Length: 543
Image 1 (cartoon, rainbow, N blue to C red):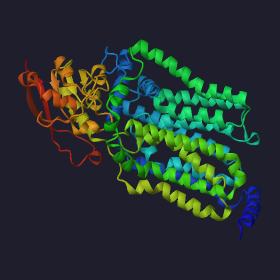
Image 2 (tube, rainbow, N blue to C red):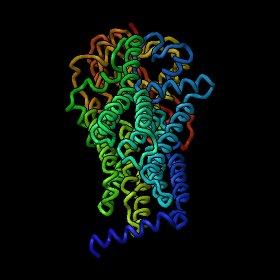
Image 3 (cartoon, helix red, strand yellow):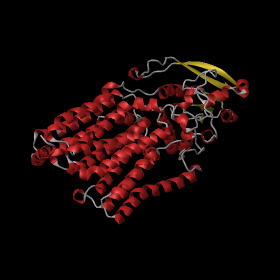
Image 4 (cartoon, rainbow, N blue to C red):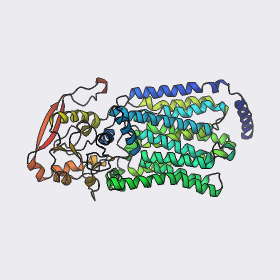
């Protein structure tokens, strides 16, 4: 069969499909959706014990905000050690209603997953409007629901999925501006307004959302199908609304914290680019099994556009937007050095665009390929669930909770404690003042100039900052070196640990103490290599 004859046969088949919405293939759309929800529930169950230590940092801010009206890590010490403003505010609202802290974060994240799913479904309806294409729409949603990353970060406590949901909404709202007039459902102005509003919400949830926001605005301006003057207005709305919110938020940040950027920005990027890139290859390799299936299935589906030149003529602008958004976000991840957290967290912003890329390709799927494509795509999207081991609470959070409970019971309230585990231990022992030796919640340590790289663990993303002299100058009552359970000074993990160990003042004024701490934990949540009782090592000030 020649290519021309193939197109003619496929055109006849497409016309038949448009009228045959009761076809068996179209009828299985609910089954595909049900399978997606089943995969989500299964992934939630597999990873039900996961929670990340950094989430407890945000919870300490939220609890101080609810209890004292102070959005700070240490009450009265205004430092912005978070980058999830809207997520934190929403969590605070739930806390004020009496909801427990960890469930509160998960409720907000579940809402983010709903937003992400609805956004992708809405985008699939725009790109796949025919009723006969319902199964393809369902497969697009399946790509989100079956994602291990979605399930893990619903449970994990951070803002990942809420930001991804708002990003997907912003992209979907802009799609009509890249389609031909006959395919538009909304006016260009209203579409641009909604896109700008959603990107503004994404920025308030996670500041790096500006990357995809910029791509969307420029793509609409350069490739949009509206007249030039309208495209100028659309660019102003898509980019201007978030930038206005950014400006207002920056003014508030400057007045409240005294900084233009979050303190975490200095702590995480204050190290040179070469050092940040050291762990990047490992991060991308470990995360690839989770973010590559959806991305590869989406890109693979684009090959189907070869069979439908008519479809390609309309959706190539959309495909350009989605591919560029994914590449730009990935470039940002590379520049920032990746992440030390599991389940491809910082790549989650590409989930919506990758799923929509799948919809773009499926819009051109020939009838003869629909069953192989459906089965193959579903198998690929489920691969991560059965390939990787389920995630449990990360060791810093797990051990930090045990240590924090001990500290709350045994150490005097109001103690000044220097430590690297800034989440779980301060969360469990809230009656103390803490020094974050990694600098996320400490302005002086984060903004140290010419931070040297002297330990291997400094090469972990977000763990490069430190200043032992600044810590000792504040004369903390207790110092916990290294991980949550502590380490002897002879085994320094991070820069502050090393510089403290080298200080004569430390040798003179601090004494090492060790405690055996027994604890009760859900057996299925236990981490096998962590002992019970736990050996807790710390240093107490004697001067």
